Amino acid sequence: MAEKIFTRNFHLADSHTLRVYRETGGYTAIGKAFGMDPAAITEEVKKSNLRGLGGAGFPTGTKWSFIPKDSPAPKYLVVNADEGEPGTFKDRYLLERDPHALIEGMVISARAIDSHLGFVYIRGEYVKPWRVFSAAVTEAYEAGLLGKNVLGSGFDFDIVVHRGAGAYICGEETGLLSSLEGKKGWPKIKPPFPAIKGAFGQPTIVNNVETLAAVPHIINRGGEWFAALGSKTQGGTRLYSVSGHVVKPGVVEAPVSITLRSLIYDECGGIRDGRRLKAVVPGGSSAPILKADEIDVTMDVDGLKSAGTMAGSAGVIVMDDTVSIPEALMIVARFYAHESCGQCTPCRESTGWIYKITHRIVQGKGRKEDLDTILDVSKRGAGTTICAFYDGAVGPYISYVEKFRDEFEALIRSGDGA
Image 1 (tube, helix red, strand yellow):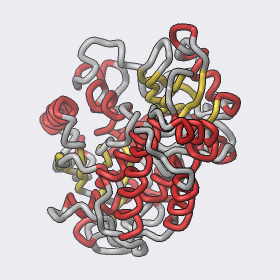
Image 2: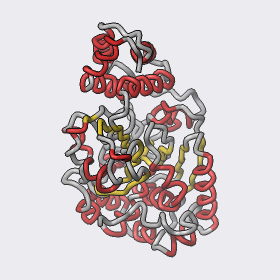
Image 3: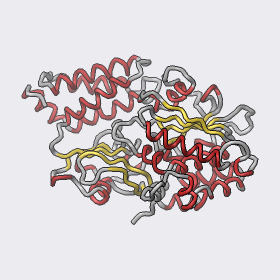
Image 4: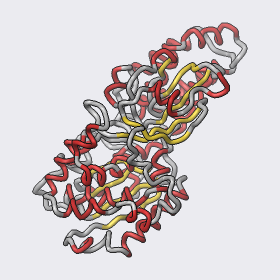
């Protein structure tokens, strides 16, 4: 059985409390980190092959190194806890069950980038996670783990908890920063990147909840140890939010080198009710879909990329043979049409029209030219917008139609609706 890192305390009563976290070795990594040079912390994270666990999968230590070293400007650490990707719920588990792992990870990461103020941007709908995490922050302040002179180290660090208002676009880091500043949550053109000009115009690092929760373990046990748990290009384990037609859905911790087949059949008990697997979305709704014969692929960033999809947020949505793929695409298209911020014309117009087309197909009123229209509009709009929102929508638009075109065409010919 693979070693558990993120979920090691989930089975314990009161795992969200400071008492339990400390009883299980929590906050020991802070002391070790305070004895290290900040650059050495970053190098240890680089050795670990830790990659962002929220979406893009960018190497974490490399990202930290982009912060200007000699700038007198204040530097900010921002945690993206705006978990809005359909099929994804693993960060909620961390915030509710092990919030102090994130706090400890933030303090260490802040030390590495010389930040003295951190923000945690929590999805507005996450009321319980917000309450639990806020209580953990209060505990940390009372114990001298946050605020002035943390544990007598001479290092100051404060955390501000900020609730979002339910906009999916604020999961994009520059949209999140706009919202954090009190503005409309619109993404910004990059460059400049947040590490140079981020929150309130200052150098800023934005990391995912799970990414920072890994940092204390890396500092305690070494980057090479963490790297050895994963694949050649990505270290560690990660949390998979598994939903859909499996026997045991939920949050599963497994090495990033696990295959999608093993995740479904070994970790989650296979397809429920003896049904046949039809398709899987491996990385949240933005990930291109995989057919049943494409699941012998490793779940690390590069493994899924080689299969023409992406690891994304690790939201694994499993579909059995009762699922209508046209209807599934319509649901995805409705989501993106609703959540587009409207700033960029290709995204604003295309997401709306593609939803209308898929809705018409599902109602039994599809036209033979509809599928080519979806593909043409998707491919023309990719790469033309300020942020990656539309590129994320294009993945399912194209892959659902191309891989299950026969099913779409049969529905259009029949005129019966899904």
